[in-house]
Image (cartoon, rainbow, N blue to C red):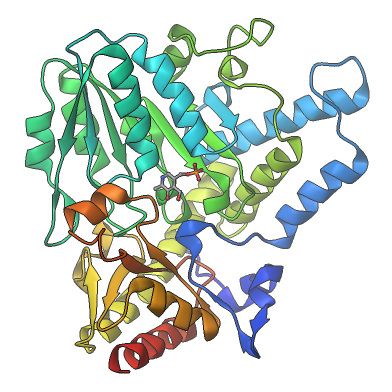
Length: 412
Ligand SMILES: Cc1ncc(COP(=O)(O)O)c(C=O)c1O
């Protein structure tokens, strides 16, 4: 049975959601740019610092605790993505992890090899591969989107993949249009020619649970600050790749295991928060193991988010002055996350976002680093779009508030 979310209660667990601006409660609809954190995450981080944390690898208790903490965070993330804890690598953020992974992966490429990126992706899953390809004399091919509904054009992707493709870099969900991609098909297409698949699950992770084993992907990257945790990046890599490949590293760093892929000292207090975020999510579901609780929690999250998305799309359909980009059909919610890039007639995205900000509604504007999407839709030159992102702590009242504000701004 799908548990239902007690949203009113869970909102009380997030101090930031209690904030007001100009006498009005803040509606945090900026989740795609970073989510707020529950008190348990704050407590886990502050306890780590107040108890005292030493560097890892020493012969005394505070150091052993740091090692335990890292292992605890690896286990938590392994449960979240469906991998093994020996396959979880931490780093500053997804972008820096992807840059360093791209260097290691590209060491196996030869001149004339090819790498495929998509115009749906955040630039953090494009530029690292373009630059690595440049270093190795490899070619970059770009898979297109269908501009009508913002879905990935699978024919274009199939055409871009060839015998010399070494890697396909693809997002699990677009941080601009909300599009969820058919990853199983994409992995199958890439593996048919022996190419690796690097999945960007940064946006996806707030909305759906990954299962890297079932998917058969090779790498998957995410960022805890997008799923109710602190600002730390994470990378899952299939054990055989982590073992085989040689990342750039300092000599004394571990020569095997995930430590081989981690540069310098980890942010231990952040890792305490990463474990706290996974445990917060697991507590929203039920089951015998943490993985089962996470699976059930994400079913509940999905049901709630879908009801918000349906409400939002139904409201927008009544507003001639507001255009949604991406899948706009309420019957196709399995193809999107509740993240909506919209154009508001008569104002720039920045003006609309600023006006909503004055009303206590926090939304993003611009390209949000999804530059290829905005270029493809011909929106880059005019300042991109307003992005309204719902996560599980948002409410139907907040949907109504943002709809009323959009209507008002588009008419003024
Ligand atoms: C889809 C997507 N990929 C990658 C990133 C980059 O993540 P990070 O800030 O952890 O480098 C973001 C950040 O907005 C994103 O939304």
